[in-house]
Length: 225
View 1 (cartoon, helix red, strand yellow):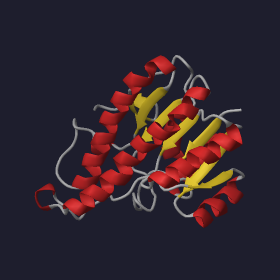
View 2: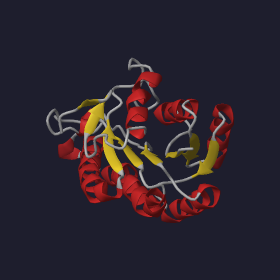
View 3: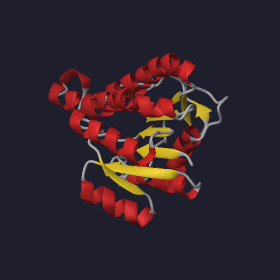
């Protein structure tokens, strides 16, 4: 049985990723900052709830302990939790406090998760880490606007490359995935269905052992860095 943990799993893309992974027969740990929100979503999906705030070191440590007691390993980590699509800001006048908040959740959160869960990821012998990114973090197509979000996702992409190289010898595949413009609370109306956006994340979470690592994908196809 594959043990999967998804951050920010109580709504939007994270919730749908949990649903799709569970439908494939995997054991899914759905996490959210609010314990009640995690429980409510987990009951509906038939998965395990866990309170987790990726910006809080003590919360992450407690989550590691909980997963270790329940399962003894972690096979899939989906770093989905993200904040601040700051369409109201420009780089030349950005509130750096907002930028710091975005970095704390969108970069330091996934970084902290991999660091702290690494012993459990190694325990399974062949794990997958999926960093949910965005084409907004692609340097190839980046322009002005949404500075906090774009810079944080570019940094997440860089972290993906570093971790993939360092963990290659542990048979841990690390990839970044852009779900596309998805109709969620963050993405707003008009985007693609949430189920379609989640498919590429699930694809990266269930790659075979000889699958790619250190890549940036949307719908299983490479995205320019």
